[in-house]
Image 1 (cartoon, rainbow, N blue to C red):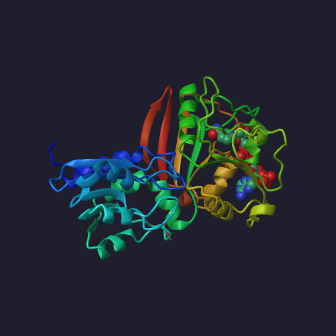
Image 2 (cartoon, helix red, strand yellow):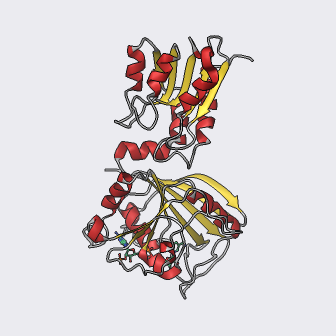
Image 3 (cartoon, helix red, strand yellow):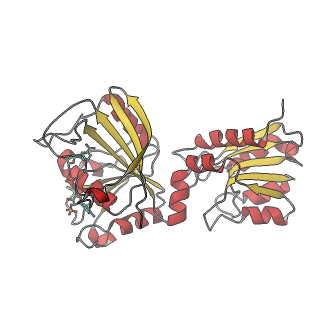
Length: 353
Ligand SMILES: NC(=O)c1ccc[n+]([C@@H]2O[C@H](COP(=O)([O-])OP(=O)(O)OC[C@H]3O[C@@H](n4cnc5c(N)ncnc54)[C@H](OP(=O)(O)O)[C@@H]3O)[C@@H](O)[C@H]2O)c1
C-alpha cells in the first residue's frame, strides 16, 4: 500500500469522524488514522457511540505491532482521563507510537491534557493540521464545551412571503414531504428539540425523530423540551406520549427572565448540565424571536416553500429589532433544493459591541 501524507491522513480522519455524527453525544466525534514508519495506513477508527471505544483505540487494535514507531493522526487531542474507557494517551504510549498529529485541542477540562502526557513520554505532538475543517465537523460539541451551553439551531418552515401559518392558524404541511423527511433527519443529529408552549397548544406536535412513511421511531430520540412558563402543556399533549423523554421547563424549575417568562440562558445551562450539546429550536415565532434577541442562536435552517399566503403569522416575531441599524445580519452558508422547497442554512453574524 502506498504511503499517504499527514494532510491526506487528516482528511481521511475527519471523514471518519463524521460517521459518528448524531450518536456520540455527549461525547465529540473523533476520527483517527494510524501510519506506520513508512507512512502507510495500518489502522483507522472513529468514535461511534458514547461509552464505546475511542477512535484511537479502534485504530490501534487494527494496527497491532505495526503502530510501533508510527504516527497517529487524530481530529481531536487524545483524552487523558479514565472515563468509561481508559485514557487514549496511555494507549498510544503503550503502543509505542512516535508521533501524534492533532487537528484541534480538547477544550473539555475533564479530558484535556493528553498532549502533555504524550510529550512527557517522549512522543512528538503537533497541532493544527486541517484544524478549521476538523473544527467545522465538531462545531456543536466544541462550541458547547467552550462556553457551557448547547449549540442551538433554529429551524423553521415558511412560505416564500415568510408566513409560518395561515390566518386561521393552520400551519401543517407548509413544506413538502421531502422537507419534512429532511427535518426528521436533522432531529436525529441533535440531543434536544425545543418548542414554546404556543406551538404545543396550536399544533400538538410529537417532536420525535421518525420515519414519516411508516412512523417507525429512530433508535436515538432527542429530549423533547417545551418552554412553558406556567405549565400549560396539557396532560394529553402528544409530547407527553412516552415515545421519547420530555421536559416541560417552567419558571418554577428554571427561573424567570426579566419578562417573567422562562429564563433562556438558565434553560440552556440546565440542558448542557443534562448532556445536551446540540439543540434544535423548532419554534414557534415568539420563542425563536426571544432566542434571537438574546443572541442564543448559532445556526438557522429555513425551509422555504414555493407558496404564498399573504396573511397569517410570520415565521419570526419580536427579535428585539426596532430599527434597521439593529437588523440581524446573516451569512448564508448553503442553499439546497429539497423536493420543491429550498433549504437555506445561515449563520447570524456576531453583532459589534
Ligand atoms: N412554520 C414553522 O416553522 C412553525 C414552527 C413552530 C410553530 N409554528 C406556528 O407558530 C404558532 C405558535 O406561535 P407562538 O409564537 O405562540 O409559539 P411558541 O413560540 O412556540 O410559544 C410561545 C410561548 O412560549 C412561552 N415562553 C416561555 N418562555 C418564553 C420566553 N423566554 N420567550 C418567549 N416565549 C416564552 C410563552 O408562553 P408562556 O408565557 O405561557 O410560557 C410564549 O407565549 C402556531 O400557529 C404554530 O403552528 C410554526
